[in-house]
Length: 342
Image 1 (cartoon, one colour):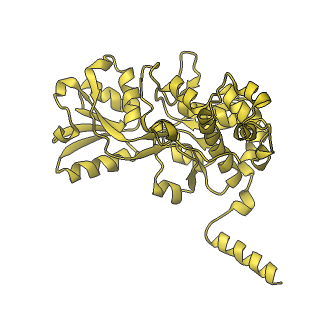
Image 2 (tube, rainbow, N blue to C red):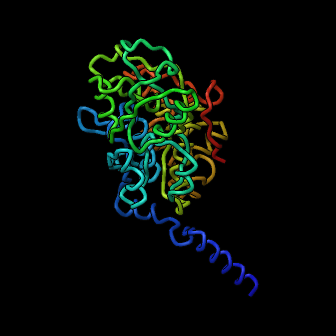
Image 3 (spheres, rainbow, N blue to C red):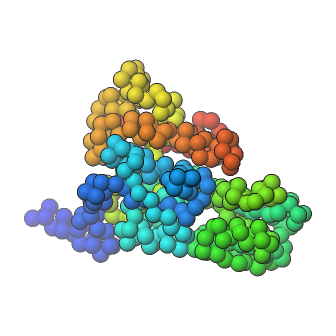
C-alpha cells in the first residue's frame, strides 16, 4: 500500500506540474515511424543553414541535422520532409505538432527552454549577434552607430539584445522590423536602413545573396551569445534523446576520425573500443534509443560527421567562408563537445 500511495503521489505531482511524459513517452517516434518520414521545420531561406538549391532540395547544416535523424530512425536520410518557417511561425508549428523537430537557426534561451513547452537537444552552431553595413557608411565599430536606422527580423532574440546593447552604450537607433530575413536584407541593400543586424552566421549568409557582397562588411563586435540548435516538444523523452544523440553522434564521429568514407570499414575492423561501441560493433547502445544497431553508421555514411557537414555548408569552400572558430572541437581550439557513447 505504501508503494502504491507513493506512486500515485508522484503521478499526481507530475500532473499538477503539467508533466505528461507518462502518457506521451514514445508518441513522436511512433507517429514518425507510422507516417514513414521526419517532418522538419527549417528557415524560410538561409544559405548555409537551410535553403532550396537549384533543384528545389533544402540544403544546409540545419537540414542535414534532420537528415541525420532520419538516417538514425529509418536507415535512410531521404525520409525527411521540410516545412519552411519564418521566425514568428516556428514555435507554433512545433508546439502544434505540425513538425516533429525544429532545426532552424534558433537560439537556446531560458524562456524558450522552460516556458514554451519546448526543449533544446543540443547546439549545432555557436553564434552571436553582429552588424552588417555598407562600406560607404564609413564605420568600423558598432559603437559608431549612434542614430542609425537598423533592420531587424521580428520574433527573434535580436530585438531585445540590440536594445540592451544600445542602451548600455548610450546610443540611439531606429528599428525597422520585418517578418523574413530576405526582406531585412533587401531593405539594407535599397538604403532603407543603415544597418542589418542578426546572428553573424545569418549576416554572412545574407551578404552572399546581395548583388555586390564585397560592398558590405560585418563589424567586429559580437554583442550576445546565440547557441543555435534543434528543438523538440517537451514531454517525450524518447524523441528528445534520439535527436540529442544524433547530434552527439556526428560530433563524436569527427573527434574519432570517423568519416562518411571510412565508417563502414571502421565498423567492421576497428580495434578501438570507443569506436566499436559507437558504431555498433560492440554492445547494444542503439537498443536503449529504440534505434537499429548501426544507427551511427547510417548517420555518418549518409550525412557525414559534424566537421564534414560544417565544411560542406559553411566552410572555406563555400560562398560563406566561415571559420570553425567556437564550432571547432574542444580538442582543436573550439567548444564543440559531445558525451561518449558508453
